[in-house]
Image (cartoon, rainbow over all chains, first blue to last red; front, side, top):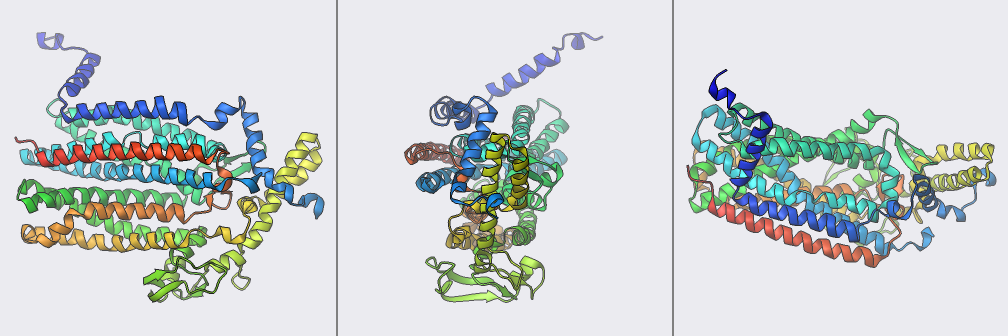
Length: 88
Length: 512
């Protein structure tokens, strides 16, 4: 084994360096990363957390309750209609 | 009560979804389209070894990166809205879309974390072959990452391969292949990707034309244009043929949408396609007003050909589809509402029987439900005329899309022809037009989505679930507040993108 091969860093280290050096050499990319992080923070820490809760996930604790609620939403209008199985 | 639903909330929720989707779709087609051009530019560089092509590839890659960074995660907002504003819909389709969309998210993440990084950071650091492979994988992966969301949208227009489960209130997948490979889904995916390619081509042509008009980066601009125009020409011709195929599918599964596109109120044999005309926005399906204001020109038989592949065939109009047409065996919304109401009542009776432990009654009601379930959504309409989408908006959006779509191949041809002749730089009129082609492309593609989504109204899922039932029972004020919040956020991001993009375009490509 040659000295050059023996001193070659492992795959993980090389991948790490590849990303590290790539990020370091960015110019416009730095601004873009800042925009991405600010955007993700606004989306997940502010909008999702305060303004966009998952309605069924937060209002009900089981899937059965959620299904019952949705069925109830679907059948409310049936009260004004004659039950076909009984009426026909 | 359904009758007391706050329709203001539904409309605000729709407006919010439209705002988010349209904003998201400013970035997506450019990412999809430009990624393919990058792959071609990069290939030419690797094949020729020319530093000018490398410089060119790196320049467009930088603009691609800006668009990607600003656009990334804007689609997540749509998922937030599903859970908050459209919780009934979200619950009902969870079985069909949940897993595939999650897989798509994970797939996109790994794709971006690996091949995107290699594409951007790999210059002189990985082998040329692997670097090029990564660029191609970005193009392939970007298009593939759009598959499931488009399949989901296609399913909402043409809900095949499913069965409604009254116990879980969910549409459950019965046949994966029917959902994934329905002709509607295939057309939607190919139409969206090919139209995105022409958006990418127009982006390059717009900026390159501006450079040529300014006498800057002339060689880079000319070379960029030749490749972009060639891809754009192929993509635009394919988009036209594929759009025709989409129209045929719509005629088969959403005839009301097609009738609205064309302002066709009364069905006709040898129906004509509107070439020129101004739709009457006041016209209702039940009145006797003229559908068009003033002069209008129809191309005889073309709508029949588009809808049924036969010149003399009958194309149903909105009146036929609302009130029925026995002669042509068309069931109207009136009849469908009757059956829909039976389905809703059967669902209610089934639920009550199950609760009471009366299994034999439950079986009877379940059978009645299954008999009418394909018209379930019609059970929630108050009037048959509610099945008609907004005609003027559908008509105008469709004709803007078709007009621009027909113009695009000519623009690409013009660019290719004058490039071949070597006189492109002298054709100031074409270069002037070229600078606004990206804007025209965006108008066409946004019009396309208006056609698809507004034309589907009043349905969230065609025939099965109207928007008024798909929504969450929230107050209008809540949705209004987040609508304006998004408007502010989106405007800010758009301004940021335009500023960064314009700055980089002004700087131009890096010197060797």
